[in-house]
Image (tube, rainbow, N blue to C red; front, side):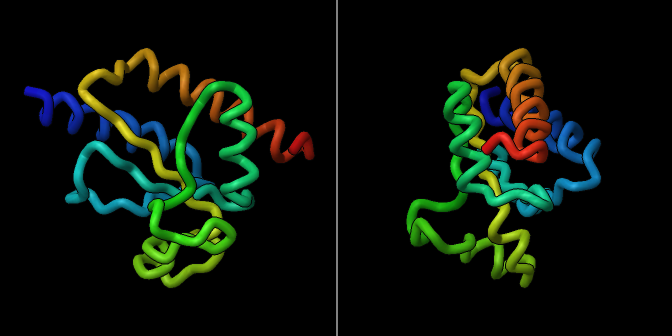
Length: 121
């Protein structure tokens, strides 16, 4: 039941991400459902993730084994694109995550995206 629930949330998140043409989903459809890695063209993920953190939204930029000031090795290996690897964000889900929390995440995510693009880093 938990795996199906998380898989359904994953599909929901993917569909929301696909609404923005500046977002590239790095995780394959067959990846584990509790983690989604995506890149946002035109951002530096560390700066953007820091801005989200100021709003109590906590996501990561890449796997913990990657050096802090380097692009994601995993995303680079998948995409062979340094800009995607430098703008990757990793969102984790659990059976405790609600659809309402995901909707709130996207509200804050797109609000922060506007601020980022308007130079409020």
